[in-house]
Length: 486
Image (cartoon, rainbow, N blue to C red; front, side, top):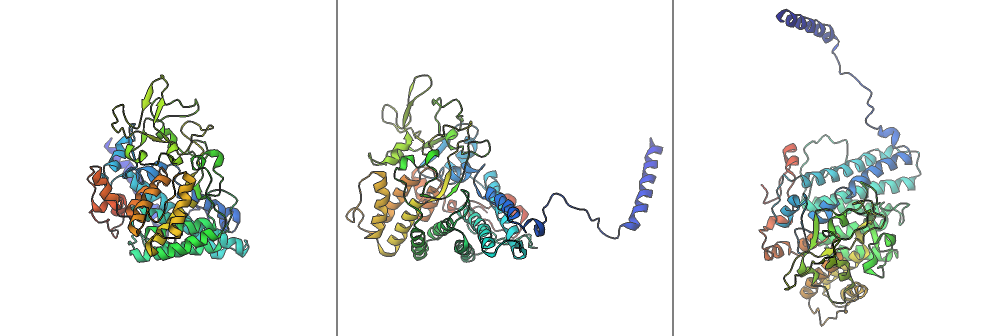
């Protein structure tokens, strides 16, 4: 055995001696697993293939329960989760017990940065494109800038300012976080430039339009409290004359009505595995009489009784909740309160009306990211902050209330800026529950921590932002963790 080992050592030494004299340069291989931008991006078909990939990362598919519910609603006063294997993750957000090691943070960070990378790839090579008419190329570039800015919008909503990576050709492997001002300037400029060139209508749902870019710009300005700019941008959106409130709010989220003039930007879903909206599979209560083609998860999205009972008795938005039902065994099940009136915190939002053609957990209901009602209420909020509630702010608020079938409000009801502000926050909860907006609204109004503590949670001031993922901190020594998570 020893002789055989020595033989192999000699053989290896001879082989190394033979090849080393030739090792004067690196081996050059033809790479088949990466595309050549100089070729692929010379055609509209090639550019669209990159854009489709970027849109795919920007959309919440596969992560909808994290973005729209776990991050955005479970730490708030309207929703919670229990049951199934998912409870292990969700309870951390219900109870403000998350930390920077949670996979939801790193997965969401990576997903948005992949969208940014794909958009950057197109933008890096756009100047060399010669085979596409100038105006059409400008529109495609506008889509890429929209995707990049929208991804940064979502990252900011979770983490605050994050590193601005604007090219695939950077040599900076450890980028730093920009200031709030620099980050805001970048996002607002990108969305403005995108809006200037994007068409008002696209051939496919889920693609960027002029209205979508302006709507994202409006929401970023709103969440950073740039009130005058919110007023200006909402005026632009209204002046497009493309959007209007859908007449019946309780039917807005059905599959049959998803092609409506209220949805400004959506993430489109189909009843297909991996491409469907899985909300309802989490919302069906136990033993609910589902169709044979539907699936009912053990994980349960629930609504607080106090929130459901806060609706006006005539509010059509309240019709979207299931407060009791007869289960498959013929038993009457109470979800709102027990027989003695004790809150059960177990009502279910059926806002995304179950899709009759769903396949298992995958329903075809599109997920609206921004709709026209949000633009109207954003404008009302900004105008109130600037000039108080009299006049247009009340009119805008009452457009939403009239659609909901509840009494209109007057200046006697909301006489001051503070009274209007507090009511508007509540109105937004009634209007946008289950749509992933509650946390950012509470943060903007300075109420997230206060209301959590009222529910008995150990919420701290730094919880208004989530932590930079630990994996990113370990990979980038220049990243600074958000305050409170060090």
